[in-house]
Amino acid sequence: LSILGKSHYELLPDQPGRWREIHQRCLSGIWDRNDAEFIDDEWGGHWFRWEAYPWRTESGQVGGILMFTENITQLKQIENEIADHRDRLAVEREFIEEIITRMRASKLFDASYLRFLQAPVESTTGDLLLSAFKDNGAQHVVLGDFTGHGLPAAIGGPIVSDIFYSMTRKGLPLAEIVTEIN
Image (cartoon, rainbow, N blue to C red):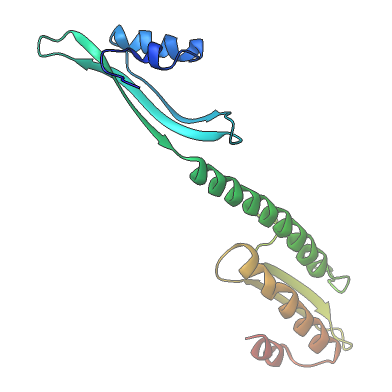
């Protein structure tokens, strides 16, 4: 098959009308591109990135079309896998946040004699407010903030809470509790 002297319309007679439009725009001097286009073919379809622009002669006239095409099917498959993993991690994070939020909502917290406003940006912050009374009537209050944000900071909250409430219930002095927490 000789391609010399033949136009792409002759070589690709089944070309969709859309491509004819793109080629005609390029022949009129307009550049066109698409960063990700799915083309259904006999192998199940592929993703392509392409650019088509006019080629100009020395006199500045459009002398033809230059088109560069790159098969990005593998890249799109990887992007889709990453998106799937990101979605799954988001669901898991919500699940973990719910567990941590429930763990932090201690029934042992006693708000007597306290006024506070706690409005964290995230539900799993490292902000901590603990309050409990010893048997002798002394009130222990701990206000803290873990370094960092998100899950790593929030995971320490339930541990500190458990130490605080169990040691306060045993009547231990606050200095000893804070040393243990530290």
